Length: 286
Image 1 (cartoon, rainbow, N blue to C red):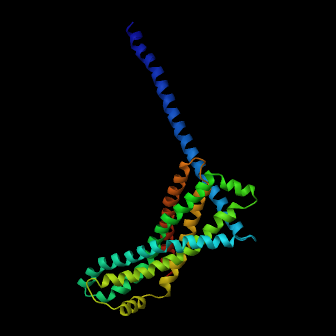
Image 2 (spheres, one colour; image 1 turned 90 degrees about the vertical axis):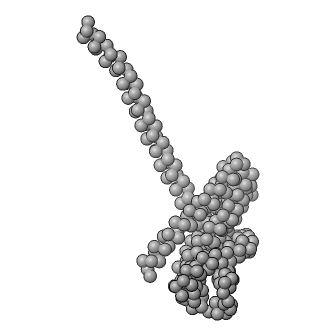
Image 3 (cartoon, rainbow, N blue to C red; image 1 turned 90 degrees about the horizontal axis):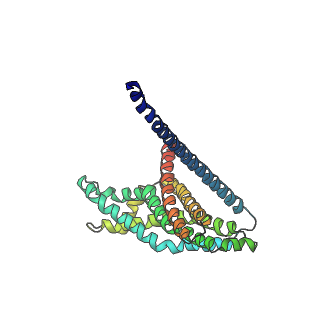
């Protein structure tokens, strides 16, 4: 009887062990299924992006290019952004000068201030900060505009009326952003140097011509070239992300906000990633 009593608890524990084993196996299978679904979703999204870019390249070199819509988008992206870019550029130069001047004064290198600010603005601060501002303004605008057109079925109506929405809506915006954002960056750099001159005159007295001659004497062609090249990539990334998120928005009204928000976040992240890659390539080549 004692042996039977000792065996009974073991027999009672066996079903519990089986249940626990089944639960652990089901948890593992659920985790594996989630990972598989995540990987499948990522690969699907990657394939959609590649097909989207392929269609843009194909429609860019088509015969019936929408020049009128392209110039309208250049006006919207370029001219309409000038006030914001002007303020941004001036503040960049002003803040950089105010923060750097005391350190240079301590070392007796105050005369190096114009050249340092000019090189910093042209090489890195001007392109990156201006691109991030454009990602917030232009990228969100593209995502919201195309997303609302998707929700109200205007894109489907264009397809029915034998108008190519990819060529009319996407290609024109991507090319306009690719061309206009580098121009906006150069414009911001110019206003940044003007703002730096204003900052230098807060606690000093430097003439406009002297400040500019000192600033541009420290700049050579290789300071401009990498910044200009990566600016085109910034514009292409912002245009691609904004149009992709808007063109592939969902059917609900809240999908417009989701498209605009995700366009800003992803475009800003990709701008930083592109900048890191460009800096590494420039460092290896130079």
